[in-house]
Length: 231
Image (cartoon, rainbow, N blue to C red; front, side):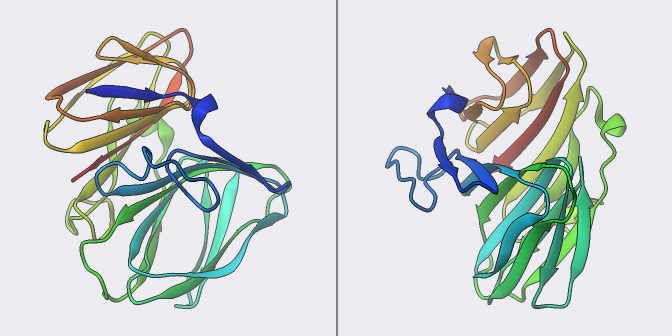
C-alpha cells in the first residue's frame, strides 16, 4: 500500500516566525485518520524565520529527530548540551525521564527542517542528545543511514525500533530500497518523484506498508529524500 498525503492537505499553523505543516495530528491540528504511522507520531515540516525559534520547553519519553533542510538550528538543553546543526545534517534527542530544550534559528536567513517524533521503546530512560554531519554529496543515488536503534552502525542512536535514511537523486535518477512489508515507512521528497509508479509531489507525505521493494524515480528536478522505516 502506497498512500499519498498531498502537501496541501497537511495541517497548517502560521505563527509569523514559524510556518508549520503537520503530517500527523499535532497541537491544534487534529485528524483522527492521521494520528501517526506505526511508531511515527509526528512529522512537522517547519519554516523558521531568522533570529527566532522555539524557547525552552519540556519533553519526555519520545525520540525526536531533526533533519535540517536549509539554514541551521541551534540546540541547547537542560543536560548542558549545545550545538548548531546545519543543512543536510541531523540531531536526535531521547527525551527519556524529561528534558527541557530550546531550538533557535540564530541565522539571518530562514531555516527549514523536518521534526520527526518516534515513540520510544524505553520509557523512563536516561535522556540524551547527539548530532552528526551528513554531507549530501555522499548520498547521491543511495540511501545513507542517519539514525537508528542500533548503537554500532555509525549513525546517530535513538531508543526505538526505527531507522532514518537520507538520499539525493539527480533528475531522472532512481533508487531501490528493500522493505519489510510488515513495517511502516514514511517518505518525503523535496521534488516530484514516483514510488513504485505512484506519483508524489514536492513535500507530499508518502505512507508505505505491505511492500517488499520500493523504487523511487525522480522527475525533471533533483530530489532530496528523507525516509523513516519504523515498526
